[in-house]
Length: 217
Image (cartoon, rainbow, N blue to C red; front, side, top):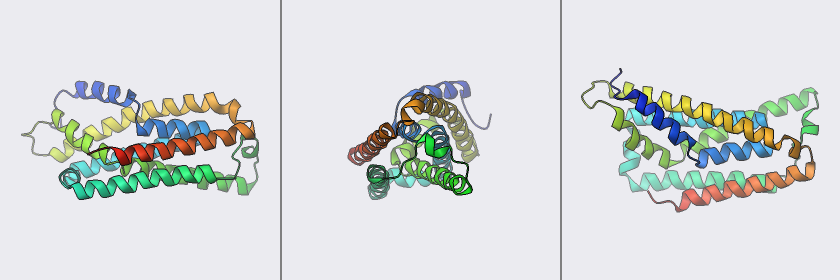
């Protein structure tokens, strides 16, 4: 089917890989704990969209350039690490409260602000995943193992596998977001605890950025 070999095996492997903790999982859990269920949901959407971006790049062959060019790899890695550190510093320095008590306000300004925040969180999730060169290299190394080399439409095979991987990842990450948000709901009702969670989240993002920066291609 679509030049894919052992599709069931790919699905099982994708599920196992999604269960393995990584940068994306930490990003979603941190967002969910510090900002709640809605933030976690939009983080999941952003990360999943980032996976689709990598799928498209891999299917078009652009990821091959990243794999074969140390300079391109380093540029993408530095941009991704800098962005994660930026998000971490932003949370560490933030003086605004996003407590549940405040979010219960139903005035129009609050609703608009929530919509803007959701869009920002979504974009941050997309960029966090897109600027992780390890994901691109993983796709190039993992997907071809399940594609018939003689199939004339290899791009279609990549797209199908990418959509499958994104779907399994979305389901798992959504479970992570819901569980993390439920765990932290009562904690975030206390403004002081919420502030502490935001600070911890900021440090986690900075740590993820440093981790990405120090990884070798």
